[in-house]
Picture 1 (cartoon, helix red, strand yellow):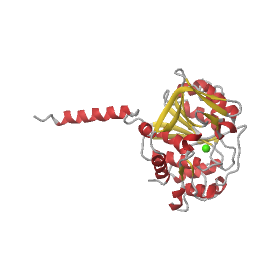
Picture 2 (tube, helix red, strand yellow):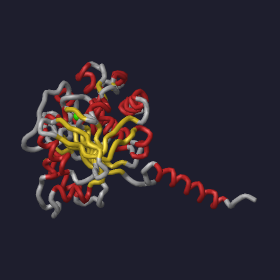
Picture 3 (cartoon, protein in one colour):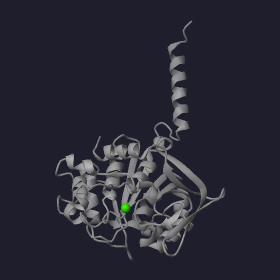
Picture 4 (cartoon, helix red, strand yellow):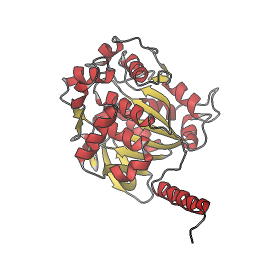
Length: 321
Ligand SMILES: [Ca+2]
């Protein structure tokens, strides 16, 4: 005798939910995410912005804001134009204040002048972080950092204000679920994002009150993406970024990998393996060293499938496929 239709549907729903739970995702759960980028000196930041938009287009992602950690005066306009092109012109943009790292960019100025940027200056990054984090549910926000840790250092050191009676470290501990950080080299080395502002890196790595998953230099260096962008329309600001950066020779996918881990929880087990727990020791000279320790709340990423397959996935997302 056949089971009634509603019993069979109930069984299928149960199986579906169990499968989702095994992948660390819950049906209908919206991922709230903030991207902190040094978009300027390398093109993979522009690629990471495109990957985040590509994943958000599949639903269940709310991009709360994007923050700029670079002192490049064209970074905010460039980011604003990318966000408009990918259909989300309303995303608020924060900008580093005070001391900042600044490098020349091959593409930000040209992208900034290629269209009308809705936002050319950005808001104060710490104030924007605090205003956006304060009303969120506890332990709900994922931050993905793909540049210098200057903004996150400033946020941790911030005091109470009109947005929250919590100081920066308390506010992060209350509202943030996870920090995914492209920075450092594993198990040991010296990497750009960490040593450009070593004081901030050290403070954030030591003091950050939630779990941190690090995407290291070694993870992305051999995954070269962006060559295919030359096939895209010439008014595409992502295409222009990669064209001006190095004429479509492609770049390592450091920043896209961090975004891929942060913004696609259901595919984490497929794309990555996690090393840890432990402590990432960040030093004054910008170098770092990994130490396994069961008491730690740090992890670092390895690839869970071939570099070629992950690279194709990133290229497809950047191509809008
Ligand atoms: Ca970057």
